[in-house]
Length: 283
Image (tube, rainbow, N blue to C red; front, side):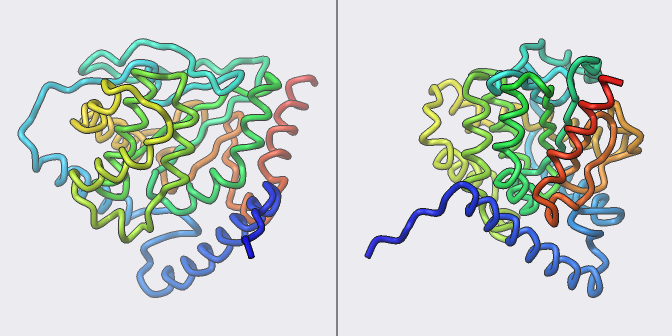
């Protein structure tokens, strides 16, 4: 007998339950290793992750750095029907721009790592609402991809930047595809660059990317940018907020205020935060 397909609501509740399980498992690890705080990577672990990233970066001969187009703020900026807002590439050696908040819309910023299991659960439970708010013209959405968890994270963020730069109309679908095919954290951390590229290209197969974009994924064209932007997030204040540096992923900021981990416990947490920010603009 064929297995019944879950409804969208059932899928979201299943993802939320998975996130709760992940948080419970992580809490046990906290007591043993002090490696994490709540559901993110924090303190010493962040520093270690950054060191790992930099070590990986130094394994290849240096090449001229290239920065992706349409990511002038180190983020993909989306409005409307998940359309990427065009921007020039950051000049090599230059600093990312800071997005001027739209006074008529709620500004939502999300810092994510494509290997972070909590980021995967967040995408499963909250993407539908984010898309709804974008289509309604309520929010401007920024996605900041970071490479905190080793080679797969770097390569996945590079793939995201390749699509944003070369085929921005396919970025939303590509982002969903990468998360839908997210490997287990331990598996991803064990991948070398070649295997990570192969895995990601397979994940992106149904997105319909051009050969030019796939070549960008293959040669890890924006690898140096991923490392630089990740270091910015891990060591400098996050734009348009009071957060001094990125401490965990996902970090979700709604009009300058961080959404805490209550999105796992409360299915309306993100909605409530956006609605409150909308109401504040009308006062």
